[in-house]
Image (cartoon, rainbow, N blue to C red; front, side, top):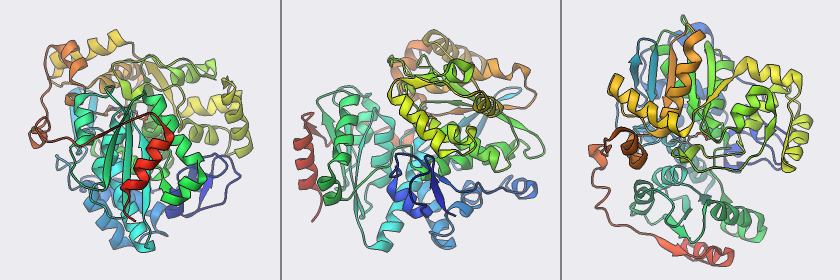
Length: 463
Ligand SMILES: *Cc1c(COP(=O)(O)O)cnc(C)c1O
């Protein structure tokens, strides 16, 4: 399988090259040149298989040129062995036609573990074979950083440095980053906000001497390997509810458009999906765009679902690429306009987007009310992100006969303050990590200063 850029001006790469590169050289995002289609009988045969086997069958056509069959099976097995639920992504029934897909049984209690754990093992295997090492530097407002540290800890081909804003992540998120003792992972508490952290990471990538010197690599959500890992649970959930013989719908709490885009890939692979519903919080650029108002940046307003507080959704570029008939020049033009504030979507592309996605938004009050009402009606305690999804799904599914599956993206214990405010219940951590509050922390407080950060990183990677 060859991988091509959404902007059409970068070299074609293999899966492994695209994974290790991340962003394409023309500024675009990598996608498979063709999306493989599974036959209806192949999809039907997935029902009831272990999650790891479904993962292998769904992802194999994408990776087969880069990894051996046994090697890839081993990678999948190692990626998901640390999950706290045998089903990996279990379904819970909320009411007669609405199901919750619990994606929070991984080691850091958010769905990002599904992709990050896999990518950790993929990086290690590819780099060990090449005899190379890389330095991963990332900025986080919480979930991505904890998932990355947990996924890469103890892997000897990779050193990881995560920048987070000092004092501005939740205690659970901070402890998940500061308590792993492995010497190849480093949590850096930066005196600044999330935007400062992100800007310093960008500065490091733009400093080519530094970038080449430490062999910098990125694992943010534009990496296609991360999207691919998320395609799997659409298949496992849908087939367990009767697909392909019965259609299902999905509602996805959305920030960077990675998770919902994985659902779009699943649909193009042949999974019969009726509706793909984009659920946003008050930062609703995607909902406004899908409602026909164009794609214009607003100001990000902090919410109780912070992992969705995003105004420019990086993976939306991939949806635009298909909506514009795989025209890289058109996508390039739109992204230039975005630099100036935003763009209107052409009529044809708007129709294509509407054929694939519907959307809704939930206010802060609606999110809190949904946590409370869902607990009362079904006994299920939702995290605020999942609650945005449930609220939007309940509205979307009225005209829809297919069962609705809402993706529960984090465990309520990761966002205890909002959950307690809404429901009066303080969500406890799962028993397997109940000592998180007692484990010793290891963190470096550091100035919001490029030179200081670069110096720290250089001194902490093995020669
Ligand atoms: C990252 C995240 C999201 C948003 O996912 P995208 O792939 O960026 O759309 C939603 N909920 C939680 C808990 C997250 O960590």
